[in-house]
Length: 443
Image 1 (cartoon, rainbow, N blue to C red):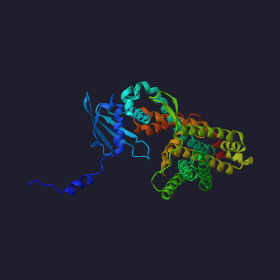
Image 2 (image 1 turned 45 degrees about the vertical axis):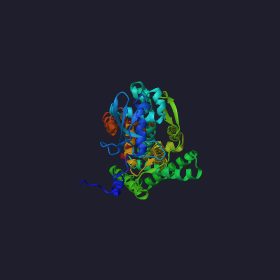
Image 3 (image 1 turned 90 degrees about the vertical axis):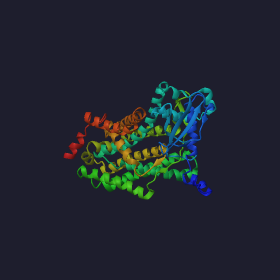
Image 4 (image 1 turned 60 degrees about the vertical axis):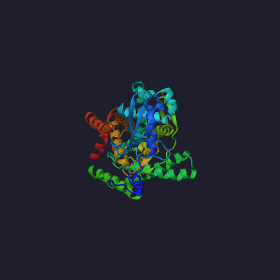
């Protein structure tokens, strides 16, 4: 006699087997079909199910009137924001296979246009997906815009490295962690100020708070760590800087927890720079603010270092600290001010990271710090213009590599460039030898 399960077990089986695929993911994947089919209205589309080849994906079977059954598989980013559209990270179809990074980029832009399927059925598939070669120039322009914004982050942080190295001849490896502190302070200040004022126009106050607090932390770092080691050998301050970086990482992790902290998106409106409705090159209001902030910081640094008594003292200490002290320059005060200035730039970089990417965590400063140090060395460490130039070059290399080559190797490309520059030109593109420092140190 065949076994017949009780009705209660039959009811429980669907509950025990899971809730099925995410309905939002299935709906978005159904919408993606419209990018590949000329007549989505005439399709017979299935319900959608979990992809057996991808635990985090969904697969949908559908049929066309002329070509028979087909399928599409989609995977979406695990970082999801409430009421925001899902972001596909992998799409494959029965006809085209898995989409390349470039075609996936076009698909994301097409989804962002919010074109109804009925309109797609009339107008056909978007040209960006059918003819990617026609939009290569626009794609490159969009990557240049993205690289410019990333370059602002690297440039601001690289300036901090160059300022400190230019005056004491040593690298402060904890500047990445100062940027991390600036990012955390940006999120906290944004929550406090925007909750009370409820307006993005409080962002200048958030920036001043984050940069000011980070400047004080940079000055305190010099006072407690670097000043007692001023006359020590080069290796001792280097080890102390690494220890300070680890201490800051773990301190923030213990105080704030190991999970990411997220800042709600602000200034997300976009400006179209070029291109058509099929593939516009755009920049967000926030990105315009980031570029303007970087330009303002560069102009302010130029004025401060070339037109003020502090700038003259800074240059004198960088050229020959012992002689500057004999001539009455308060070298310790000047070095402490330089640490604070460099830390303020790192805090501004943290503000930019929090504004642009939203998520911050205790370990975000490590890789960003090393890339910014690479930018400073490539441009010529100790040179402020070199820091800005190196930041832009590293960012353009990184975004360009991620756009046209395997993304997993972009960090390899960045640090390979560092090795090549050190071998070919150890002083960097705009750097010079510190002969004066060596002479004064020997005297």
